[in-house]
Length: 97
Image (cartoon, rainbow, N blue to C red; front, side, top):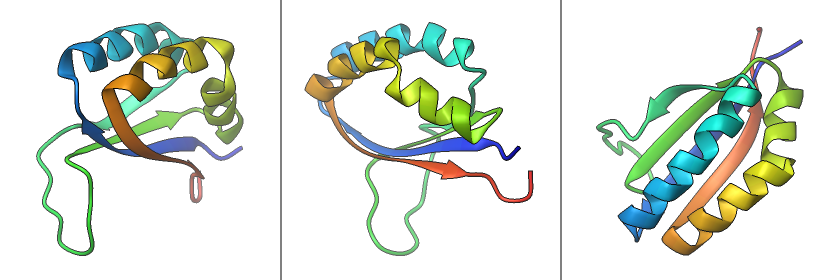
């Protein structure tokens, strides 16, 4: 069964509230087996455009990635993020895993 990934590009407008979102999602991500592969490290845009913050989360399965996003717990945490940032998020099935 392929792994699943969240790929997010984020502009944070309210850092304090965004930290509350991060605290709220920590338990949720652990529950679904998520691991951060990229979490706002230094980035260089070499083509096109990107938001200032990039995040890649790996889940054990694509189903876990989808279930996490659609869970009531994550949707509650997401409400914090919506007021503090703008984001583009995609859920992607892993290749060959």
